[in-house]
Length: 176
Image (cartoon, rainbow, N blue to C red; front, side, top):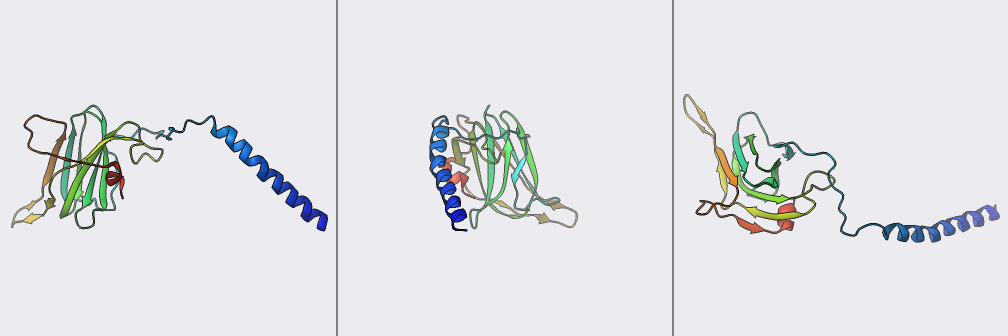
């Protein structure tokens, strides 16, 4: 019984000693800048997260991506700054997301190249910005109508444009 115990311990030590050597030789061949990328291309308008907020009816957000690069748009609850909706907008395309409930929101967007391996964020951001002000969605009801809002933005620089977004850090954009 003692021999089996010693033999097993000796085998484990030999395996543990061999493992770092194997790992070092493998690590030498891996580019330290390598970031695993998304293997499945996203569809324009694909919802990345919604915290269950999209409902029948409700308000809408329309984003026209006037740039060639792809964008991710995040809608944050203004109370706690948590992401309540994020979606993908392909370069030179437009998306309208409907079903946003009443509330106060901040809108952010980022552009980048390849998406990370989970296909939910950019592996590396080119830039991120936050649109100014708080966007308030309030449903109005009359005797004959229910009125909701459509918030519309075009993402590209325009001389004399009417919106001045604020640059934000990648960490700020990627925060949940």
